[in-house]
Length: 254
Length: 265
Image 1: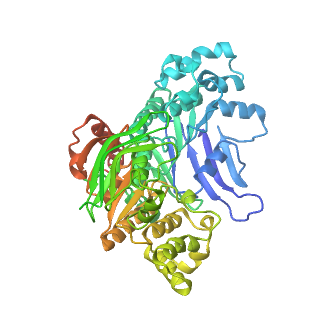
Image 2: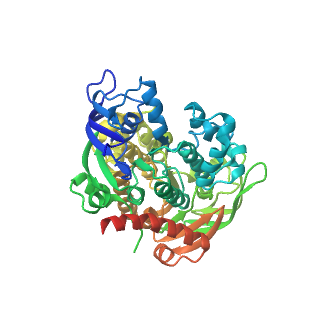
Image 3: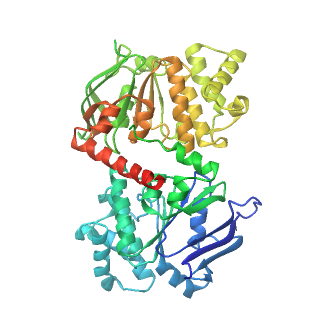
């Protein structure tokens, strides 16, 4: 089966800099096998996500979508791509337009992809909001009327309203309190099951990674030092950096 | 006598909303207390009230006695005498806590010259000492650097060195490791533990993370919506939480942690 997303020897360097931010990265994202990109600040996690979203172009190597090289200038391909791959960001306070009602925010992908008009989008918006556990009247309200956890649910509703196959999430629960975090992790798990969604998640939080992703790739200074089944990678780390990462997680007293 | 004695503390905004209500806690000399709660629980405001640093428009009622000085209603002059000497604070975000336009060495020199009256070569030596104490490599280079030129973990060590510069009796740490990477956090917690132990310093450690708190303190106070929900030994609270809220908090933390154990199995 062709992987949905594939990075092959991909590198990215800023213009004028010879040292790449990420270097020689290869991995595949296959349907049903959610992937976590794990690492610390500056490891290149977000840069990888930008490559996967077509927001940055690899300076070496390739990014493939459904087997074809991703070309940000190919409008037809990008339209298919945007329908299939959506994203959720870390901070639900800056990722929702404060001046627009939730209904308009959530229907944005449907309208900009030319799938629906404002009127035909309404039932899909209601369904997406219901799926993420928000009341039906949420569509009429503004983002500031919601808590951080609810805002992240709105962001997830927006990302899933056009039934994408892949959800790219950049630290989707890091800004949330622990009781809220657990609920959003549960929601993402439900969506994985019910919507057959494949998650590609960037995170520094190993317990969230272990809760959500079948596969894990560990990044250190722009390179993948280890990747494989999450249980294998986190359970018996082969690379010393992964081991240090796992050992550093603070644990509750027994 | 307790180093910190907070009795029936209330914090109100100018428009009359109550943000902290009826909060009482005590810390004995050399004792460590954890203050745990989620966003909006009032834990940070409580630490600000202890140093008389509440934002304009907010008023405190009740009593906050810090090393014998009544903080609520104290004059700015009295407060200046207390801050740094009796209690010092390390904030969550070292990038905003440090002055971006001032070299790190000068920022550490400030409390040293003001409190201990050091000058010249003596002051320079004290700055390097302070940086060495927080285990910063190349203290001379770091003293000359601006905050943006060093890493987040190094910045937080600098902030800690500033707080420890005048040997306060109480160290207040407000989420001191939340902005740090997990491996850096682990080193920072060990460092904090060692330094506080060496000095026999009392600690008020604020965090949203039960596991982090339990690495530093034995006794914790759980806050929600400006009130104390539960108080006791951290192990007992994690093992047998009594209140509904604490139960939810512990259950959430456990659920996330168990995912890690499952994968390890």
